[in-house]
Length: 218
Image 1 (cartoon, rainbow, N blue to C red):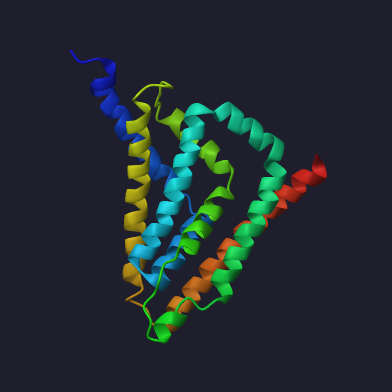
Image 2 (cartoon, rainbow, N blue to C red):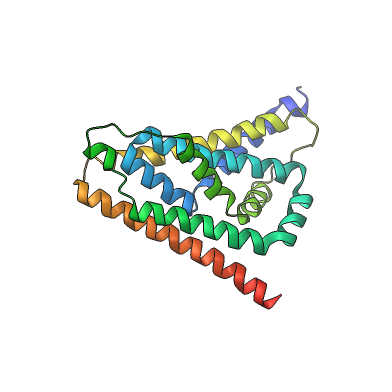
């Protein structure tokens, strides 16, 4: 008979954590649109690396959910208006870049698409601009009934499973849109990128509007 930490319940919790990683990535927010943008303009690897930025953010939020949710919740309550407005402005700015910048300029000039650290950090900033994501992570932990004992070695495989689930989702998500880029003409891809940019801008505007409404009504 194995101890609980090594037995069947632990395997089930790891599988649940893998599903949490997938479910946390599914909502169609600004980061998802940015992955589409990068996959269409720069290919599968660029889209996948952008998705990994979202995985990084989800991992950070998961750590807060496990170890310091009360502290994180208190911080969000005190600074939610500022986070919404500043985060919304960041999302609007990135959406504007996606909308008005030609993502295929290098390809037209005969140079291959390149993915930079700046692209990755923009994706991280976009992910962090949505403070409600930590509540989604916490809710998923409750829905899947994953109980993690703090200061216990079981935390590590749970976190790794969440990372694995999120990374798996973004791998296939970015691969799908990277393959679509070979099915459309250049002008169609440009318009798809512009539409995704406009959607991101609208999401940013809604975040800012939510922040300003809360500021006015407080």
